[in-house]
Length: 603
Ligand code: DGT
Ligand code: CA
Ligand code: CA
Ligand code: ZN
Image 1 (cartoon, protein in one colour):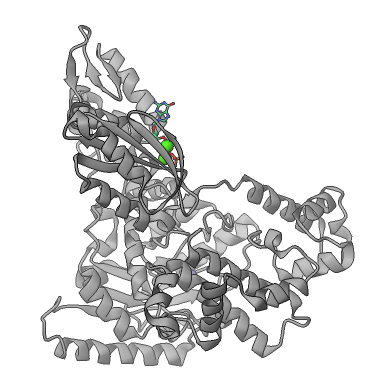
Image 2 (cartoon, rainbow, N blue to C red):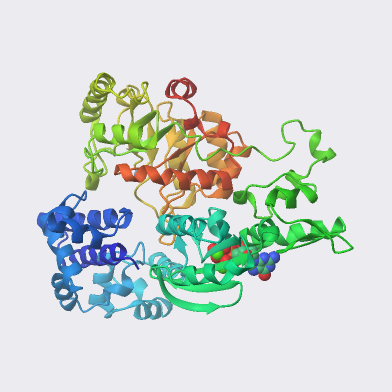
């Protein structure tokens, strides 16, 4: 684990313990502390640089520059960086008879539940909890029920299933950095990261690098170079063309070195997925060819392809298939050239032209420091324009019923819309470098959907905003019919343009609330409601198969970063990857339009 993640985890545990220890859950000072630790943990996890480096350069002053880090937290950071421990954390732990490390991360089973189960049944860890649930003891504790007991068992199973896979966003910068470094290593002709990372999967099991070399004598140099990188903590194995290492953050990385004439075929093979590869080999055989990682060969064992991926697909009679589609879910059939059956459907012939990584013009879920964001509207806007080349953002702050985020009420929303108009004028005038002259901030909100499906902001106010999203943030355990009804009610509201993060899942942590997704898609289509792909890499909600369903049913989508800090705009790449895995075209994603076209295209 990187230092940032180590400290983030400790901070989350501190927040959790404070909640568990706080008898009435009401001490305002404690509530504030809990929030600060959680916010600091979020920030640390998303920081693109190592906290230890910041401290080395600028000491405590450097730490204080990080958003959400105040004096008290900065002191804890300093303590950890210099001594490797946080006294306060150990003290809290000693005061708690429960094994908090274990419970922590069991999403949905909060401090209150744990406290009550400890008091009533002496439950101290997950094994105790599982045993008590299996023995049907929990249902009889005041405040619990059979349903709650079953839910607890389900959460435990989910927790146990959770493997060592990493979220793509947690490894992305590291993976790219090593890829670039390999490309510039002496003797390397081409270097690329393959495997699930190249397919932009939500989670990554291990990292696979592939390299081709200029000449055979470079082979061992390149392997040496890889195994001695500063990120390597352990060499797990090494052969004449392969090396396996463990990186400092605990994830495994492989390197395979191949000659140039096999680079394309090895790339194809090791990009996967396994299922796609197997189907492709079968196709090769039916064409009288043999495909493996070394190339494509004919009956006389002559190499007919291997240098590039394009030629591999070409000799098999296929269009080149983007890595994000390679799951053997119909892409090979669609990629067949001269496919008469498909040619007849004019539009369906060939592969869809997927949205490209540089197609987005705007970002429609952005938070400011008016609620739980960390920067002013103007700062969020200028960074989007100048550092990320966007043409517009929508400020979609939370609304009043989400108290923990200081959600805005009707008057505050209208004031914010006026303020946005002023900021738009001001940044236009001050734009001396003529960056993106038409840059525009849109007024918006992330309206909270209440338990009964009503919204917490009145329609006459929503009507005055440029574009509006709505989302569910509470009552996750209501049954599927009710959750679906809440979303349908929202979609039918003419003032709601977008449903944000439609299923509410958090990858590796919680499943999300149950939704009848085909029903939602049907209603979204009828009501011209847009569904969001939340690009934050722990959500990526909608998941790929739902995106594909939406696309097939002509439902429009948007890809948003859910930024709470300008650095978070860099998450958009994960949303685009997700959209591509769901076969979405540029025309399916409405924030590929200009701001004006977008506004003209919403309900
Ligand atoms: P991961 O690491 O679990 O996130 O997923 P991948 O897809 O990166 O899988 P990995 O690292 O085990 O292997 C990389 C690629 O190598 C995989 O996508 C396809 C190919 N591959 C691995 N094992 C086999 C196999 O037994 N048969 C075939 N056809 N291909 C394989
Ligand atoms: Ca892999
Ligand atoms: Ca591998
Ligand atoms: Zn939200």
